[in-house]
Image (tube, rainbow, N blue to C red):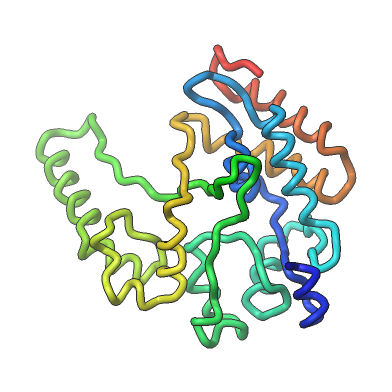
Amino acid sequence: AAATIKDKTGVDGFFGSEKGYYLEPFLLGEGTDTVDAEAKKITVNSAKGQKAAETWLSLFNGKGLHKADVTADSYAHRQDAFVNGKVAMTIEGPWEITNFYKGTAFKDKNNLGVATVPAGSTGKAAAPTGGHNLSVYAGSDKAHQDAALQFVKWMTSAKAQEQIALKNSTLPTRSDAYTEKVTADPGLAGFQKVLSAAQPRPELPEYSSLWGPLDQELPKAASGKESLDAVLSSVEVQYGKLLPDGFSK
């Protein structure tokens, strides 16, 4: 598809990211993740993890595929290329919808299309579920806990989620918040259609820290400075230091 787009339009068909989070759809598409929290295993460098990374890496080289951008401003460069029609496709989440519409390519919002990342060996497309959390501090007194709980209930109500979606372009967690106003936005409607592919992330307190090694190491493979094997092995070693005792390779 990327090569066809290049032939017909002269622009690259796909611009991928060198950051760790954007490896996730490929990992999940192979039926794995960075770690298996339940089994206490580091899986980023497993056979499935390696296959996922190989697919991710292959999308930086070839006709119609944008070369890896490993500069400090890579995210901004990729967004600029996509929203201004310099590249046809990228992997991104709904948090960027409002910025998409600021570009020349999406003056007509209906130009924005949303699809799942093609399935891996499992035959099933998948992507990580993003999100924000609301929490109530257990150490506060009852009055404050009750007040906080009321706020959480309000924030998670259909009305509040509708307002947040319309103002912030984040996806509601409630099906009844996908009102006509919300689904009138092609971006929000598009992401709603692919939500069935979303997979929960591992339930692990250290999970957010796992992006650091990936963000540090993956650009080395994307730029060709180091082999993918070396990069994944390094990430695996760093994970062993970040994760609690009991995790194995």
